[in-house]
Image 1: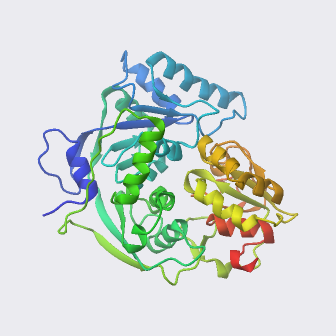
Image 2: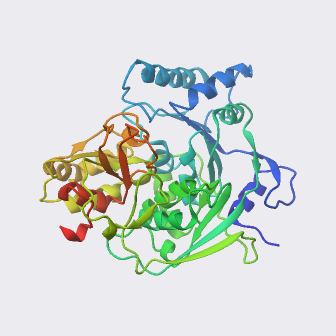
Image 3: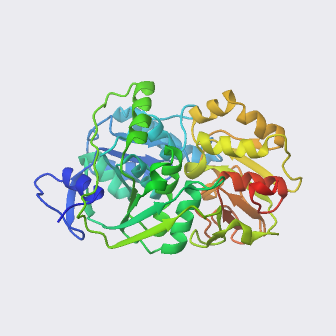
Length: 426
């Protein structure tokens, strides 16, 4: 019996293991482990309790204080300080300070730190984003992160795999966000619990990397252990450009593809040709329906950004919708590029100017309001359209606020109209 991409990567990182099947428990070597300013302080405390004098590899531990920087209060400042002190004490090379950082799941691929075929864990559920590069990447708890920082390994249960096949050619204004919201609505928020979502098909092959990151980012919203897309020429072009730009020492990587006789617990096919932009209603990402079904839903705030849709193509799309238009007087539009590099590119390409002229607030890279952190918290009764990944109760502020998830074009159009809108309505 053949193996899936995920099974091949896990097997390659499990010394002494000759074969694996879904349900097996293995101990695997990790190539990278990552934490942020919420999860790392706990991991650092547990790491110190182990009595280790050094991390397993100074170049393979990643610390990104992206959730609450610039610090919103004394507590968040102390959290960030813990990361900075630990990185200095243990010589962590991949520590990113305010001014050069970004949202971890955009920053790490952008800099060529993770490569195809890698096994990566991160103390953040959206670590699955990195599966877009043909790597196995999954979220873990802070204690698992502590152990991995010390010993360079972690335990895993080999997941079953659900294969999602996307066929057809997306219409204008339909992108990766719509494809994954549609799939989550079909699967449900626990339909892929502790399983791999292997995303494939002609529609995926035609997508740029930014859209692929968006899709894998939201695999967790269906309960998945990881999302993964087979690395191809588009992937390699992205990786090689990142390695050149940031002069990363690691150059070699492995390209895996699933065997023709690989085992799948389920195979689902979707035709994207007739799909329109999808909007997920409160309070679950699985409540996705076509945007045309939300006419008349008024909006108080729009957020464009996050590890899901804060990349340069997302900002380009939103800026094009907003060009020579104004944000509705009853709407706050908050735009947060995912990394400092994206911030500069948005400035150089004129996207920042388009946002500001339209009446938006253009912020420094941060997770910001996505997790109810800062820079856009909702009041009681307020309604937001966001390009983020979750719309749970109280996710972005008050428990009685409401979040609709959408792609950047729909978000921008909604900011102009003051209600949920298709870009073609402008």
